[in-house]
Image (cartoon, rainbow, N blue to C red; front, side, top):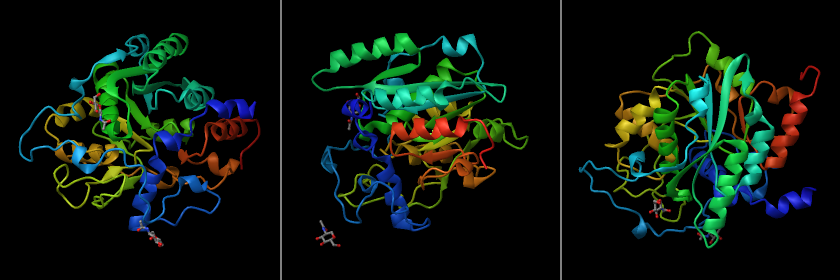
Length: 346
Ligand SMILES: *[C@@H]1O[C@H](CO)[C@@H](O)[C@H](O)[C@H]1NC(C)=O
Ligand SMILES: *[C@@H]1O[C@H](CO)[C@@H](O)[C@H](O)[C@H]1NC(C)=O
C-alpha cells in the first residue's frame, strides 16, 4: 500500500520547497539552532547551493518604482474557476483554513482531509478547510482540470483561480486566498493560511483564538520574522531584485508555513495590494501589506506553539503545539492518528 501511495506521490519539496526557503533565512540569520540531523537531507540547502532556478533574473517582471499599478499581486486580475461560494453562506465559520497546494498534489489534500481538515466542529466552533490552486499547466492540463472538477464534486473543498500555479507565483496564490475570503467568506471571524505539509493542532489553535486578549480586528500572528535581510544573490531561489524590493530588509512578517489573521484583514490586503509593489516572497509580501496599512503583526500568546522543524514525533509535544512542518503526508496521517487515540498524551 505504501509503495502504491508513493508511486503517485510527488514530494512536496519538488512543488514548493518552502522548507528550504525558511531554512535559508535561518542559516543566514542563525537565530535558530540548525535542524536536527534526522531531518531528510533532501530538505536541506547547502550554503552555496544553486537550486532549480527556473526563471533567470532578467525574465522577472520589472516594476517601475513609483508608478502605482494594478499588478500581478492584485487578485482582481484573476478569476475563480472553482469557488464554492456556498460554503460560507450555509454556515458562519469561526475559523477558515486555506491551504495553498499544487494542483496535482492530491495525496497531500487527502492526508489533510483525513486529519485536521476533517474537523468541522472544534471546541464547539465551526471550522472549514479549503484548498487553493492555480492552473496546472503542462501537456495534460485539460485532463488535470477535469480531475480537479471531479475532486471538487466529491469534496466541495477546492478553490481554483486562473493564474499559473508556479513557485514564483505564490504571492498571487496568497492574494487570491485573500480575495476569496474578502468576497466569499466575509462572515468568518478568523482565517489561517496554512501550507499543505503542516501538522496542525487545530484544537490548540481554536483555544488560542478564544483567549479574551486576542484582537478581533487587525490581528495577524504566527512565527514572526524580524529584520530579515532580502536575498540579493542571483543564485538563490529567493532572490529578489532591488527593482522589486529596494529596502535591504523585510518588514516584520509571519512565516508562510502558517499564519493566522482576523478576517477583516483580507479585504484590507486586497485593497492595499493595488499600491504595494509585488515581489515573489509571499509571506514577506503580507508583512509589506501590513506595513502599508500602518499595522504590525502580533506575537502569538505562546510563540513556542508555532514550531518549524519536526524533531520526530512525540505525543506529549504534539499535544501542546499548533504547527510543525512535516516530511510527508504519510507522517501527517500517522502522527494525527496517534495523537487522537484515547488516553492522556503526556
Ligand atoms: C560550494 O562550497 C564548496 C565547499 O564549501 C566548494 O568546494 C564549491 O566550489 C562551492 N560551490 C560553488 C558553486 O560555489
Ligand atoms: C504567474 O501567473 C501568470 C498568470 O497566469 C503567468 O502569466 C505567469 O507566467 C506566471 N509567472 C510565473 C513566474 O510562473
